[in-house]
Length: 406
Image (cartoon, rainbow, N blue to C red; front, side, top):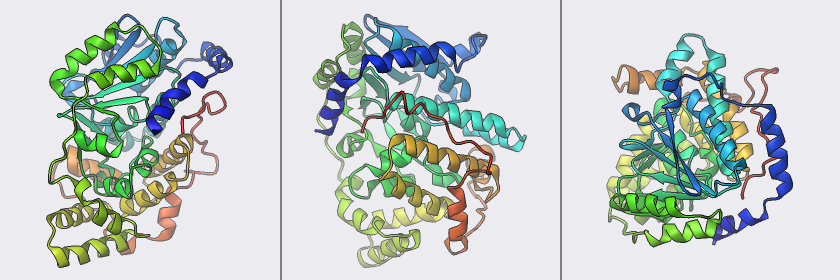
């Protein structure tokens, strides 16, 4: 029902909005046209009858996003939206991943080298592109074949259609690196059924392709062996009608069968435990259930929570709860503030410590600061949601020109 409504809303976009967007884009561009060939190779383009396909092309690092990729995608999508010969857009990744998220190892090195302005540009560029995907005037198909995590979820979920496969692995594992689910995650996680968003956002646990469709993260599920047929069929379409694109995807859809171990079979106990007001109460509830039932799910969930940054857990819970009552642009603007706080080390250096422990030194032994939930004060959490300074500008999104879909 919700998906059908979203498809129908495409017909209500005004020509006046398109003219305003065209005027604005003629005055500015996010991408330096002097970008060298190597940078252009990070996002490849395929042109078909009435569609264009953007291909994330950093397979050796699971198509991790950098500032240049965000800027190039933004410019490509601008040009395709204005082009009357482009009816819809497809986004996919090369290799075994759709996109593992932002290039946080490069971000880690930039922070340690004091290049904070470059870090700000990284976040503002990617968040602006995510908002563009969420307000795009043409149908958008993201083919999520393989690893889809962090920022990879951000550049795909706001679009019209998301095709998951048997190879798709979805996760928002930011609390395990001392960060918070960002790139619009506080919006889409908060709109999942029950308390699924809190569970995924706090634990960083994974979903399979079938589970993604069952809880609404993806709109379609197809076996990966059918992807060449799907892409060939989409490439032959001559349309800008979202309902026709949707019908085409439906033709290649496979039935979803949830594994017996799926977390979706535990939705009742999940909702019971993750509906509490604080992280401490959530953990207490899980420990009570675990002691009563010896449920392996409770035990593994507790283990994940105890591996995460205590500050990140409290910040992420508050973020997801606020996201439930905010629009996509409001979430992105708030997350931008939070991300700048996370990289500034003013409150804690947990982000750099988490990246160091998991992806740089790989000792898997982060030293969180504060080390316990009890030592994370309410003031620390609240500061995470404040501007970096009185003069720090908020994320600037074109909300007057582009209104996000509900």
